[in-house]
Length: 78
Image 1 (spheres, rainbow, N blue to C red):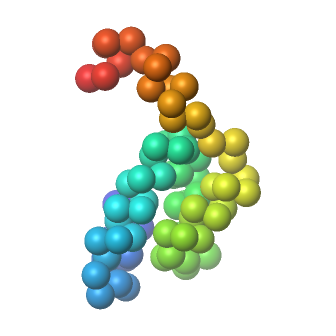
Image 2: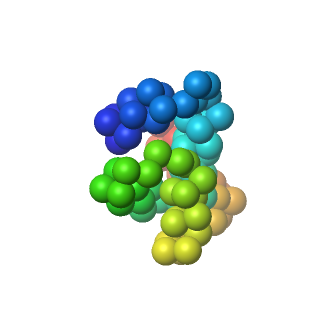
């Protein structure tokens, strides 16, 4: 993921929006799925976060953020 972020920063004048969008994906998708989507994007030379988001919407189940939040125990928050 570090390599993807470095290349994303190099390709965008202001990568702030793209980096925030990438981070926000964690709310709706599992980390493993995000990393797979990023790996696939890198293999195809795609450094557009919206493309990753579309891939995740199409190919993953996603997660229910509210359910996940309420299913946590106090130990999970750390």
